[in-house]
Amino acid sequence: MAKVWENEKLVCIKENDIQYIQFKKLLKYPQIKHCYTLKNLNFPPIYKDEKTLKNSYKKICDCLNLDENKIVKPHQTHTSNVEVVNEVINFQDVDGVLTNKEEIVLVTTSADCISLLMFDPVKKVIGSIHSGWRGTLQGIAKEAVLKMIEKYESNPEDIICCICPSIRSCHFEVDEDVKDLFYEKYKNLQQINNIIKKTKIKDGKQKYTIDTVLINICLLKKLGLKEENIIDSNICTVCNKNNFHSYRAEKENSGRNAAIISIKKES
Ligand SMILES: [Zn+2]
Image (cartoon, rainbow, N blue to C red; front, side, top):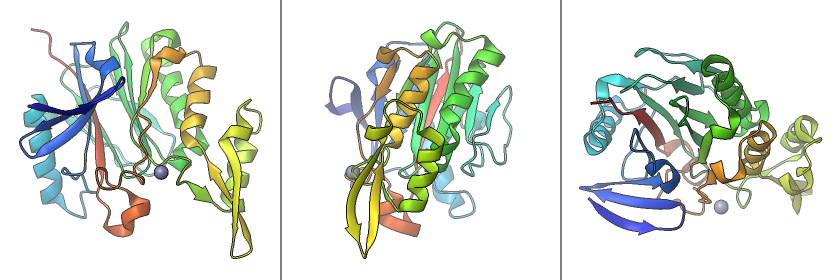
């Protein structure tokens, strides 16, 4: 195991032929394990390439000493549905999973979409949430926090939320129709003028950029999460397409990165 690079928030680890990043904030808690994988692992949808998927799970589980039979990976369809997990189970049309059970391995995958890794160290609850632009538009981060409050009596002030690498406003350019959807939903956010920005006119059409990371940060803060508990990786997957799978950069051929979190068994 070798450290490839680190900054104030992240550390990148290389082990055999795989690499992953970890958030220093979460590494302070020895009772959990987590990572966000880099491009040398691929977690494609099961119908596309089951062999690669299984092989990738095996490699990362070996690395982090996780049980591959305890993986819960919902079938993500860009919803705002968040489910509580008490056992290994298959979910359809679910984009966020939460648990307080030891050894369950929560996984969501993405290629440009935002993955959020959540942890409440007081109630000992973890979450892996897929918040693509459609999920962000529907406020799945908010749904996840509300469910932590409802099901586990979490105090938002205790919740840590790590924002994994994703497409950033530098690359998330949209047309008027998508811009309008975000504007209608989030026009009352104080930061709206930083969230939606006019850019260039292309082929006679006005283009806009949307800062979906900032939307998630605003939603989390409004719910009472502390600024120091919201950790943004600050990595754009399109700018860093050599290190991360990116749908915008690679289109249909793109693979998937995995956001993984698990509570250790108490010995
Ligand atoms: Zn970028």
